[in-house]
Structure formats: C-alpha cells, structure tokens
Image 1 (cartoon, rainbow, N blue to C red):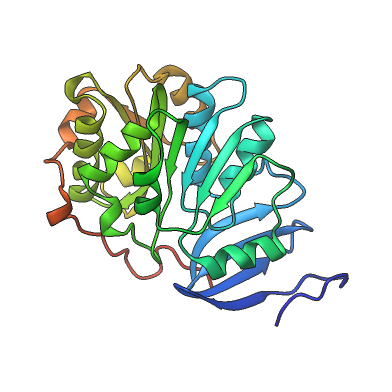
Image 2: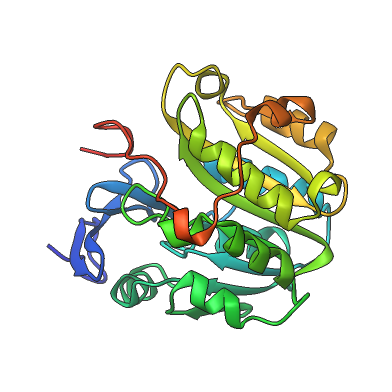
Length: 287
C-alpha cells in the first residue's frame, strides 16, 4: 500500500521497478526515515530530517574514507549506483557546494526515490544510465571522488569488476582524487583480491595507494560481509582513517601495506570478469 501524503503515520511503499520489487519501509524510531530494499536486499537508509545519519556500517566507512581524504571544502563527486541517494545526501550536508553526478541504471527506482525521498537543494544531478557506459563517456580528470556502490540484487555486476572499469574510474579522477568501492566477499577473498589487483594496476602499479576497510570478523574469515576498498595516486591518510573506523559503533580495521599485498590476486579483465560472490542465505535481507 502506498503512502498517502499528509497521513499521520507513514506506511510501506511497494513498487515494481526494472530490477525487481522495491519497497520503502518507514522506521518506527525515526519520523521521516526510510529503508529502501530491492527484492528484499537492503539498498539504502535515508533520514530526510538528518542526512548526516548513515545507518549502514559500510556507508559510514565510505564516509570515513571521504572525510579523511578531503577534510574540508566542496568536492566534485561521481556516484555509480544511486539507490536512495544516501551518500549524495550525506556529502551535500557535510560538504556544501559539492557538485555531484549520480548514476542509477534503474529508471523506475530513480523515479520512486524522487517521488518519496526528494533530494534537498541543488548540486546533485541524477543520470539514469548504466554505470560503466556513463563512466566511459565522462571527461578525463573531471572528478575528485568516484564512489562505486552498484549491486544487482546482492551482487556487484560483472562488468563493474574488471581492470578496464577500474582504469576508467582512475582516468576520470584528478591526480589527487579518491576512488572508493563497496564490495562483498568472504575468505579466501578471491573476489576482493582481484579487485585490489585491478585498482593497483589502474592507479599506478606499485606506486598506487590502496587500503581495505572491513570488520575484523570478515577479515578473519568468520563470515561473509562488506569490504570497502579505497585507492588513490597519493598517500591515503591511514592514521586518521583508522581512528575513525576504530571509533565506530561497529569498529572496522584498515588493511594496508604488506597486509594488502597478502590479499592481492591477479587483475581481472573484461573477458574473465564475474559478479561478486553469491551471499549466503539471509546475509543481506530483511524480514
């Protein structure tokens, strides 16, 4: 049943979209907060009254990577994957004046979000296009930040997991730019290892600066979960990033240097690219 405008109590919204069934579920503890799911998999959590609030742990880790790399001032950002636009909202709040390009492949989902979760103010442009296709058309050195957070259901699509894709992201970034990707994997981390190899090659080989942010339980191979990858051509502020991750309600570790070397596999080219692993039953679903 769709929400009636002006109703005293928000009710769930359900709509068929291009890539499944989307639902907007109100949070009983926050008056204007919504969880967006597609086919049961959580995609975004948005509090219209508090855009600084990031409910998802992986989203906070992406935010920590951005905040430590860009301590102040506006940034030119590209978001591959829109969903409920939680990170563009956060960035607009934290870095007023930022110019943001958001690429969402699901036109019907983008329309649903625009209807029920409108973006506040200017500065954010939404493109309904395939992320890889849009990125290929973007100009060289036109962005400070590229965030890749694209999931088809619960998996990163194969065409966004290759070294050719990573090279395009590096091309679009300015020399001091930052690339951040939300990934998911479990031990022995074959998928993440390939992604680390991709960005290392794309950002300058041994001169690349790469780190991984994840919960200790995921890194120790105890369970499947999200891992946030950050890459740049300049040194990453690892100490500041580690402090932010350690201070979170669900602390994460920052893996860098020799520890990253131990995880790196071979780069994955388009011809051999595969989606991220199928998550275990119940890993990314809500009731």
